[in-house]
Amino acid sequence: MTGPTLTAEQQSAYDRDGYFTVRKLFDDEEIALMRQAIETDPGLRASLYDRKDKSGMSTRMALWNHPGDSVYGLAARSHRVADRMEQMLGGEVYHYHSKLTAKEPEVGGAWEWHQDYGYWYHNGCVFPLMASVMVALDHSTRENGCLQVVKGSHLCGRIEHGVLPGEQVGADPTRVDEILKRLPVEYAEMEPGDGLFFHSNVLHRSDQNRSPNRRWTVLMCYNAARNNPYLEHHHPQYTPLSKVADAEVRQAGVRLSGGADAFRSASANPPELKKRLA
Image (cartoon, rainbow, N blue to C red; front, side, top):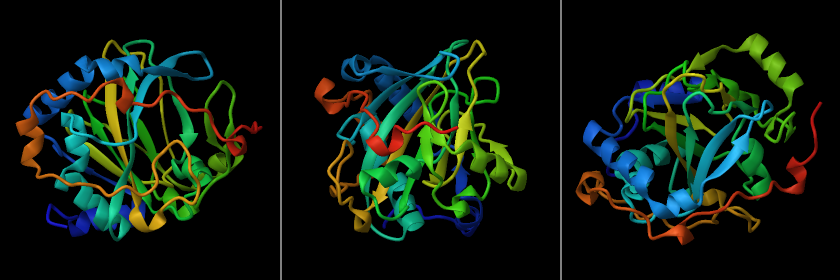
């Protein structure tokens, strides 16, 4: 690890709460480049798909497994991200996947309570040695449906997941209700360029975007190299991560992906996640 490592305060927050925020993880110039690339990349736009909430409102999404050499791929490979992930997860990491979540003004859908490891467990990942960073491309506020996180919920362990009303897969509502009686919820409001780093067992959700302002974020997800999945599935098994210097993000300019082949279409949930929860 040669890039910035966690401060004592960040390490304490990660251990205690399951998450921490780095303000201006990417500066204004860098986030403007990333935003322009994501907005104009024809390969990404061709791969967009919708995920509806129980009222029928949608979040638009795009997903890619390998970071590549686009400006936003270089951001995922940068030392400032990858080195922090390695300290969080206690060793070498690789890029599990990234995705755009785009809540459009006034019509962006909600997300129900879930844990990322609630899904990734079924992909053959034995341990929850996995984490993500959500990078805000726009102002992310309560009004436009920012992420909500339950403090300390990563210590609850993996919760059973299944199909909820609508088409989303989420955590067992009965267990979630009991957790919410015991643990507080925080609204993770962010400015463009801020990054929220969080454990794969942190419960999180978001409200619909009823505001006139869009809310776009990029999620970069990582797995510990020693947690290589034993199943072949729609996300990669261990693939060495080629890190780049932080300066390469700005130097790349508005560099796009290699085309539509770099992205995945929406994948079906495995049978274990198709059961309906009460």
